[in-house]
Image 1 (tube, rainbow over the protein chains, first blue to last red):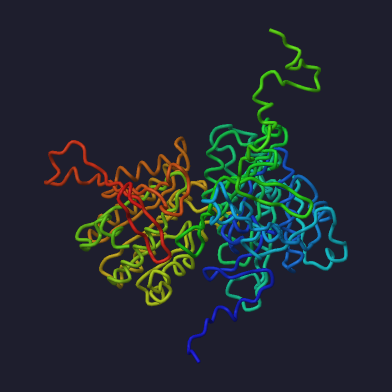
Image 2: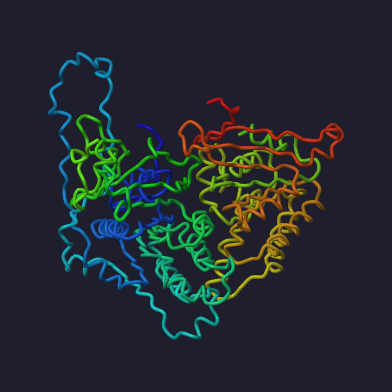
Length: 369
Length: 247
């Protein structure tokens, strides 16, 4: 028998986590997202989503993150200044089992006659879903029942601007909401079980919804409109980074970055954030009707990937990613252009004469030269 | 790892003082340089103070284990000293106090003096200088802090000082600070991503510039000193510098 034992393995048996680089990783609730950011959300780190313009998809991702926490018995801290966080919890999706695609086995292996060079090549796998078996799938049409929610350890933090003049005078932030939230996070993290060195470990999932939306900046932009704009947010993010470091907590933050007037705020924020992604939804944009993107609901950009406790950050095999939202799955895939097999609608679009069908436009056959 | 140390001109021992600045462009991470330096100092038994503003000691310890050195053991022995400046400044903010640049300087000097008692030379690494701007220090204050530490290292004349600064974007104060540091140092290191994005073959570009060479005899008559460009690839156990174009 070998005399060597991995001490670490026996120590980490926290439900819903896995160990990588001597660090606990929690699932985001979306297996393909876990894969593209390097195996999940590292504890002690900040994960940020630059939300889509309408905010719908980033809200769905938040729900997945929280639902995964409920399923794994993790503690939750839900923060929002825009709406009551209890509303978000009412819509948490229920875990479900998704059948794996058996399409590969069903296709009979025929000998290729023309494109025989391609026969030995592996099937192109654009989905990352099968790469990992970490995390759960959720059914968006069914909600987690109230009893389960009540039995979970969930803290809510609905931040509102009141008349707390005393606080704002002594606070180091212009907008007192940031100070309130930092205090709340600090108090939550004070528990021994969230410390990385503690023996009975528990995971705390912190979700901050739409950080930096107008209510967060309201007081900030009152006075001088020079480059101090948004500075509270940058300061908050750094303080949060320091608070979370060496704890078993994961912060999941959605940021409406399209509201910021210049790049420097987001670039400065990204320096304090560990992993960040940006969602670009097709809804409302001209890409919505573009047949190239007909299979997807939006593009998925990776804006920052860092390596905690390691030198080498994870880089996925492709950086051109797109997502689609199904009832039981949020899937992130490699972006592929559709094959040009038939007289596709793409041709129609290129044809200048095939303009709006519904608007009573003329048809090609009507033109006579 | 030794490639980085050689390029920083630290392989032959620090005879006089040496100032190094690391400029991170486009959000590229340069913590591997600090990990290499930690390994170098531990191997040569050089005392080192790391002023932590970005990464934690635990991070460097876990990276170090793969690079074949035990950081925590050396921290316990007193050879390496970590000053968790980020935590101290954040704690002050949470308690609604603010630490001025002067006080921060004094605290840094106290830390340096502690090591100076036991060791002849004190090497210093300040990682994440740009985070001082996040904590609402002004450009003038950050410049003052750096200047004070530089003066101290100049006085010792047998240690190196490395300052790592992230340049967020062109018209940002962090970029100005990185340029101010670049003006003062002997060796400037610029780390950047590949223009085409991330790759698994190469981690990024690294450029070493030696502004101090223009004062050296052998380079006196050169008008333009060429920087050395490399590609770098990170591995779990270290970093490899590659010639441009090679993979």
